Length: 102
Image 1: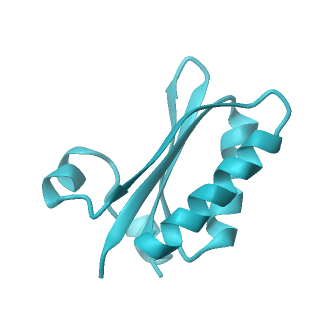
Image 2: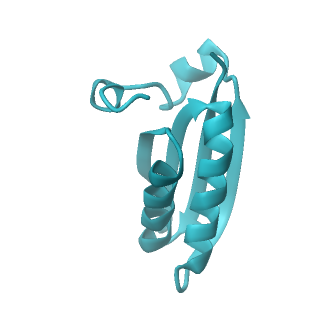
Image 3: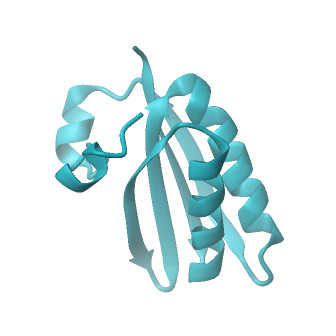
């Protein structure tokens, strides 16, 4: 089954929190990473079927844009990431996130 990775990076914590909340509520995706990127920038990564990641990302971007003072730095979707990308970047399912995998 084809899977994708979606990433949203915002300036400020409230925006990324709203994006993460909206993404997991909008589609059957798993939150695999939530981290401080740099200088007050936060990022959230989700994984799931490609058909689920796209609407989840749209909902997350819309939610972050509604937060006062939030700036979306970047957002992107990587469909079907290769195994070597999973080995290098922290986007693989962990023991904690595995139980929430759809």
